[in-house]
Image (cartoon, rainbow, N blue to C red; front, side, top):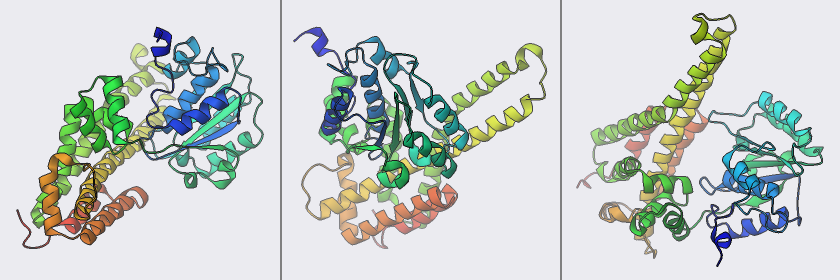
Length: 393
């Protein structure tokens, strides 16, 4: 096998998505191409990665014969985020607004700089506001000749019917633990035992699996969360666990956003000449206020995302208990704490553990949909999860 054949392609990062890869390669080769695409799949399945791989294949110097080679200048610049004809739009806030979308629509009406396609990838299309969707709809209904829209959302129901009906659907699935572990070993050189553990714990979320495999602190935080169900034997323990999740998630969110916030402030000061001139022009105050507002929104979203991840880790423990009680075969997601899960099986019924999963999702809905403060929602949830009287360890 030659070195070129062994070199990675743009498709290699799409773990366990063979059907989607086949369809996208065919489209990039000229079979079944569309001006609008909707990529759906559960969190961590690689929606945006699939869209960017497809964008690279459309721009690839070897297309249509070998689209997505991963080695040519076009593929490298697309994946590196520097290709002039590929725009990737994402948000760390709560929504994507109409002003941004209108700018994209104006850009989409122009011809591409190169000879191939102009590609616009919109991550988190489920966060588009109603006005933003209306602005986007016209561009998708009357597309420019060489413009391709790629929208990413968890499910088709997260996108309005008027938009999704005009898009070709690409559905991604949750990759199996074996596929994820194989990816970690091959791509990141992770030892097989650690890769297998991270793959199970991630529940098919590639980014989460890589973080668990490469960062001991991430593993430590998750281990602390999944150990909590076995500790919920008193009201005090419930309160402590709720406070701990709220505290740790806030610290992690601040660590993730702190450096970015500081860089944005430095860039804003430089743009308005605050550093060089030593004074603040009139336009600086409203620009700073807008920046601080965006940063506050982003921090809130990041905090909720981190709490949400902890809740899904808790769900995995109770799912393991249900699986073990029902005699399901195969490894547990949390095989490393099998003793704790066996205790849950002994002290509660599968029906109770299913109820517990429901209570966790209720807390999740309270925070994400009804804006209930995380600390309050977590306290109520932990009390609901408390072990039956007499079940102490």
